Image 1 (cartoon, rainbow, N blue to C red):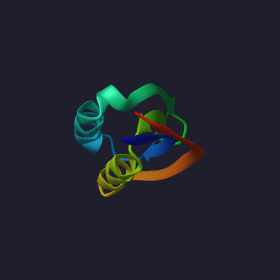
Image 2: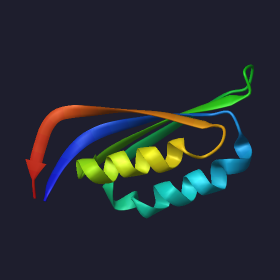
Image 3: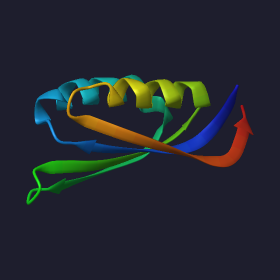
Image 4: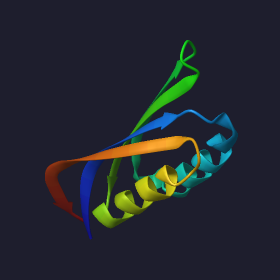
Length: 85
């Protein structure tokens, strides 16, 4: 299995879907390196960064699932380092 380090950037503008977001992230918890969340109260949004070391197709799938939640937007950035396990 090959894994790749990636960061999923998430902007949440609809808090009612946060439980679904957390459920998705819980499914990939073994691959999560770290997570940082910043509430931006003045704008009514939350900014979340999730660092993963996972197979690229899994990272892409998770990012897509999160991005399809209403009021939640994602972008994913991949490192060029691929590790074989």
